[in-house]
Length: 245
Ligand code: NI
Ligand code: MN
Image (cartoon, rainbow, N blue to C red; front, side, top):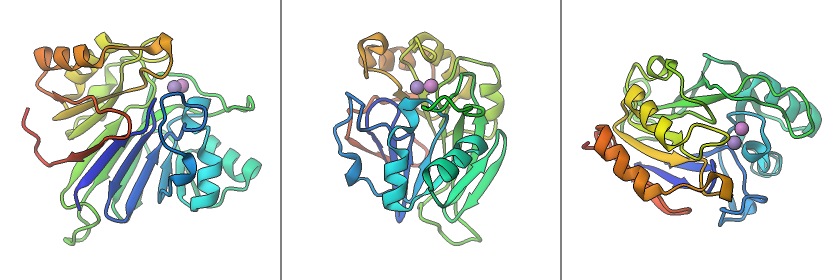
């Protein structure tokens, strides 16, 4: 199966290949940019980059209903399990990897802050390197090996290059500014990470993080070799292997 990626608004993404349906940072109900009902989402995996409301708001409801495996840091996973009775949580920490039928997921460092909606300690904030790959010579859900790097909320930092050292097919990077890096820094990040393709996130949700996506796409094409695409909310993007720059 091909890999299909859909921006659900703010920093919420849906990544689907075959039977694998990954929901990244679920923020639907209170998200003014969202155009789906959270009750229509039935993921197999929910990934939470950090504890802030705009990344975790709908996680409890969706996890409870869908029985998805929730992958996050140890503190968030423990909070979901003990405070909300969510089974099937996988708590990890920075640099660690979990192996799943479709490939692996690594929890990567981000430079940001993290506290849970009720004020509890949220642990480290991070991002995810999602490696879709063939397993034991047999195809997993993806037709091809593909590495997707979602940085999560972060400032620009030089270890982005280290994290991406084995190559990145598709990067999802924040451009909103104020709470994360802005458009300028995102281009520096793209130069460090050198992805084949890049998608912007964490922008146009509220006025303080409004950005001109078309201008950003143009700037990425002028200054880097990555192919930039700024999808509309809810439009499905098919990821192909070896995207031409
Ligand atoms: Ni945040
Ligand atoms: Mn955020």
